Image (cartoon, rainbow, N blue to C red):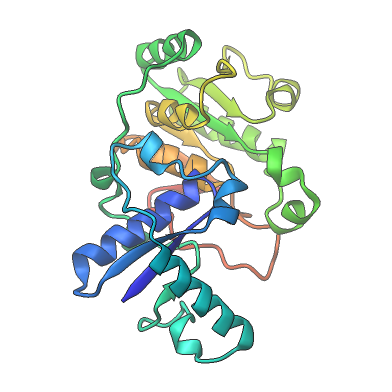
Length: 267
């Protein structure tokens, strides 16, 4: 028996769901999802089945009680085999499952729903599809500006983005950049790129529309964020140039996850 904890924002939820599907397909054990309501609520709730054409397993009280017991044992430091998710024989997997071993079939498992795009997003999609080499740039600030997050995750600098833009233009001089961010005022001020499109959706559209639009681009300059990581991954363009930041975490004690394909460029 294994229980995968579903938590965090959409980018993390995708990794966790892929771990769930991987184990369902590759083991004979019973595999369950636990919905961590507190850590899901911090990021807008369970977004997977809104964004992707999947049906999530139902929430059950039995799994809630099992996880509560396992977390109590973890707090008391009893029977660590049951909750130590570095072990293959553990029951509770409460990490973020960021490992490329589990995501080979992500594009097959998770297909976008048929969205009704608002007019602004329809216009952006039309512009992306009209360009020979559209490049998505994702700048994440928002919750990363919170003091604890700033010291743990940090922010990608304007210099990183400028270097990545220069790298793209060397290979693709006609590239057009599409800017996605939760702090567009900062992006406009610090990344004034000629002929760029600064994507601003209607207030009623969910954030995962940005993810969908990013996947329609051919090149990607991502933030230190699993959200934009999946924007590049789901694009699945063999000729795409994908760039990610060398400093994935500000916290030097944290290990950079093994999630980046060999062909991606680290700056």
